[in-house]
Length: 166
Image (cartoon, rainbow, N blue to C red):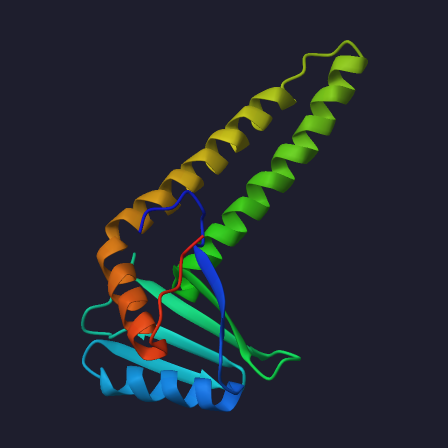
């Protein structure tokens, strides 16, 4: 269950209506009460590791359930950290990307005017920050690999067929 993606995902089609598919998944995970917490909304299901077992690096599975024209159901699944942790990574990438871009423009302007291009140091620093965020995401995936495996195995049991993670 190792991936170089920050948020591993899968997609497949089930031969049932969206409501039947949603009910089947919710019923299965609700029956696994001590292991998982289920938050279901129309067209969307969030499956979390139970609070007693949840750690900072624990994954959660978000399922989007859509109807297809053929009368089947397409399920999009995404594994990732809890929302709070995902927010740290999202804003970290956003800030490092913006500061890196603006300091790159500043460094080019400094270089063009024959000034000392100290903006390049900021660009390098933001590249290091982005790399550290990526490595932190990979470390979190490795620490939460067993829980991701449990989530995926349970999802496959709920649907009754395998789903390959991309």
